[in-house]
Image (cartoon, rainbow, N blue to C red; front, side):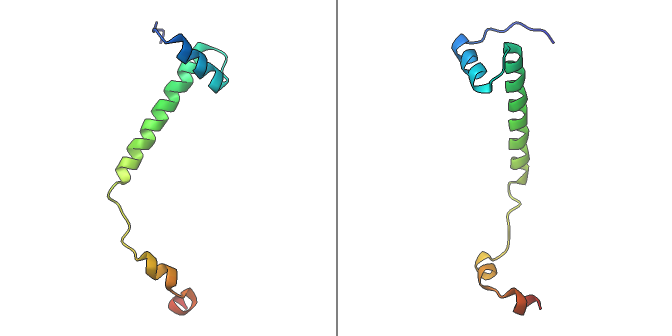
Length: 70
């Protein structure tokens, strides 16, 4: 898809330098891909909210696996 957008020159220059990419097109594509990936990860983490763990960490630290489990 071809589109025209107004991007801050200093921001584009910094993104280009930090990414090591050569063209504005590559920088925009890279940033959009990273944003989508980041948001999908955030959504996945949100999906795990509330799944908690019901174990007893202190008991796990002090138990004797050989004695307890054979």
